Image (cartoon, rainbow, N blue to C red):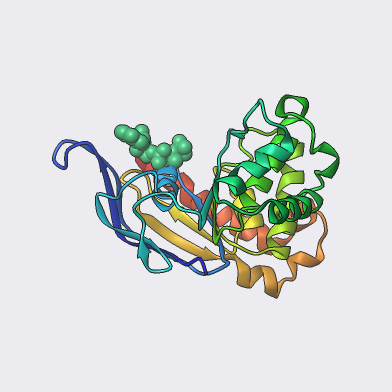
Length: 265
Ligand SMILES: Nc1ncnc2c1ncn2[C@@H]1O[C@H](COP(=O)(O)OP(=O)(O)OP(=O)(O)O)[C@@H](O)[C@H]1O
């Protein structure tokens, strides 16, 4: 399972009267094995939402639950992938992936089997003995994603995971993540600034308002993707050319532009 629920969540940094109101009345349910992307203007509280699910940040008001249990701290049912790959530079690819499994006291034979599987799935087998500095940014992020996936978490939390990559590598990683998510579905909360990325990857896209961040609108991409059979197109650019894709993208752009305009008004 991996159902995430935000129930009337608010966040104030600092004292209630004088502090910064970052989030207000966030209500959102992310279903088991659903991929939800959050987009919104800079500073609207996207990362704060993700950090609450991860157990890094307490709520001020309301509650965030996973499978009905209020989140108080990080736990093995949730794994996080950050924009900065956050690999241990002194450990090989294999050992980086192994670390989390060791912390969970998984037996040696099971660790070996699970790491072999994820290395194959992510096309990393030949790089198992490499160190992070020997890999490109895209490869390092692939290792970071493998390290999260190998823990078999119910929930994957991804904060701008491709934000530091060049445009071409980013597209390759987006196609890979779609492949991985279809083969090995997990509940995913994905934060991004890139509207196309959100529409391409997510089942639903939640658009947030400017601060204090609220959920402005949630778009159901999956039903359009299925109805228009986007998955029959192998390449991302073919999907992005489809009228249904362009329509969704433009809708989100307009919505974000309204928020930006209001922010600067
Ligand atoms: N620990 C903190 N103390 C005070 N203010 C904070 C803290 N963490 C975040 N904020 C503020 O809360 C707001 C929301 O931050 P957050 O990082 O969640 O936004 P975001 O939507 O992810 O932004 P961006 O898109 O620029 O990454 C911002 O204005 C930020 O400055």
